Amino acid sequence: VTMFETVQAAPVDPILGLTDAYKADPDPNKINLGVGVYQDANGVTPVLPSVVEATRRVVAAEKTKSYLPIPGSPQYGAAVQRLMLGAEHEVIASGRGSTSHTPGGTGALRVVGDFLKQNLPAAKLWLTDPTWANHPAIFAAAGVATDSVPYFDSATNGLAFDALLAKLRTLPAGDAVLLHGCCHNPSGIDPTVEQWQQIAQTLAERGVLPVLDFAYQGFGIGLEEDAQGLREFCQTGAELIICSSFSKNFGLYRERVGAVTFIAADADRRDVVQSQVNRVIRTLYSNPPAHGAALVQTILDDDALATQWQAELAEMRTRINGMRTLLVKKLAEHGVPGDYSFIEKQLGMFSFSGLTKQQVERLKQEHSIYMVGSGRINVAGVSAANVDRLCAAIAAVCG
Ligand code: PMP
Image 1: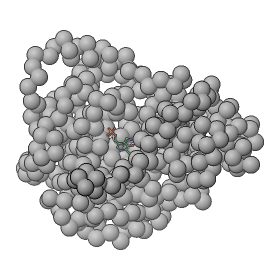
Image 2: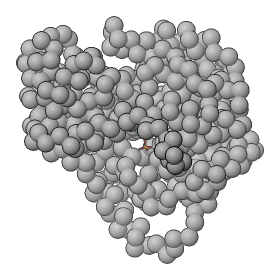
Image 3: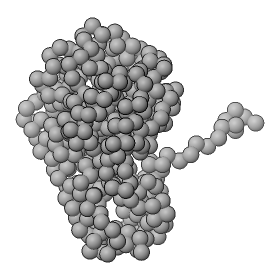
Image 4: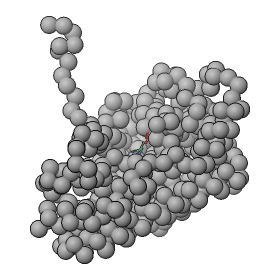
C-alpha cells in the first residue's frame, strides 16, 4: 500500500457539493437555490459597476506587488471600521479596535478560532442552532470546543428569543458566543434592536465574549440598520470580535476579501491582542492578498464611488425583497398549503422554507430544483422567469 491509499475520501461539502450536482444536471429549466451567491433577474452574479471602476483605478495606480503588512493595509482597516461602526464611533475615536484584512469572512473566522485556541484555551464557543454549516467545521479545525444555544423556533418560524436569553444567562464567564450580526444564515431571522440590547447586556453581565459574524451588511434593511445590533455590543470599554465579509455586499466572492476586528478595553490592550493576532496570521497565510481589499478601500474612500456602490447594493437588496413578496404570492396561487407569509419577514439572502429533507430530495430528483437539505432557499435564485415552475414543483411535493 502506498501512503495515499490509506486516505479516506472526505464527505461532499453539503453546500458547495450542491453546485456541482446542479452544474451536472442537463435539465435546461433547472433552478439553483443552493449556494449563497447573489443572482440578478437573469441568474447572473454580476461584477458591480462601482467595482469595475475601482479596478480600473487600482490597476492604474499600482506600483508594486511587494507584501502587505501582516494585518493588511491600515487604510483598509480604517475604512472597514467606519463602515461597521459609523465614522463618529467611540471605538474609532479611542483607537481601541484593530482590524486585519483576512481572506474572506472564512479567513476571519479561522483567525478567531486559532486566536481563541492559543490565547483563551479554556473558552468554549457557543453557536446558534442552526448556524452556517461551515461554522462548526472551521472551529473544529482550529481545535476550539463548540456547543449550541437555541435560536430558531420552528413552531413560529421566528426567533426563540426567550429560550436563547435563558441559555445565555447560564453561560460561564470566559466562554464566547458567535452571533450573526444581521441576515442570520440559514434562518433569515434577526433579533430586534431591543432584543439585541438584552443579548448584549446579558453577555456583558456574564463576562461572555461576543463574536459577531457580519457577512451581509446592507442585504437586510440597509447599511446602517443592519449594523445596529452589532453596535449594541460596542459599549464603552466592552470587548468583542467582529468577522466581516465583503463577498456579498461588494460581489467580490472570488477575491477573498474580509476582515477581523478585535475591540479591546483600551488602545494598549488592543496592541497586545493584535500582536497575538499577527502571530496567528503569520502561520496561517502570512499576509493577505491585496487586490480585493484595495477595491473595497478605493470605493469606501471616494464619496462618489461609495454613493454609487450604495445604490448598487440597494438594488440587490430590493430585488431579493421583491422576490420574497412574489414567492409568498405565488406559493398561495399554486395552492401550496400553509401560511408562508413569514418568508417576507425574513432578512437577507436566505429563507428557511420549512420544507422537509424528503421534499428537498424530491425537488432535486423530480424537478431539478436544488436547495440545502435543511430547506434553506437562496431567495436570490428566484426570478419572475422561474417562480411559477418553482411553486408548481413545491405544490407537487407538498401535496
Ligand atoms: N459567514 C456567513 C454567515 C456566511 O454565510 C458566509 C458566506 N457564505 C461567510 C461567513 C464567509 O464568506 P466568505 O468567506 O466567502 O467571505
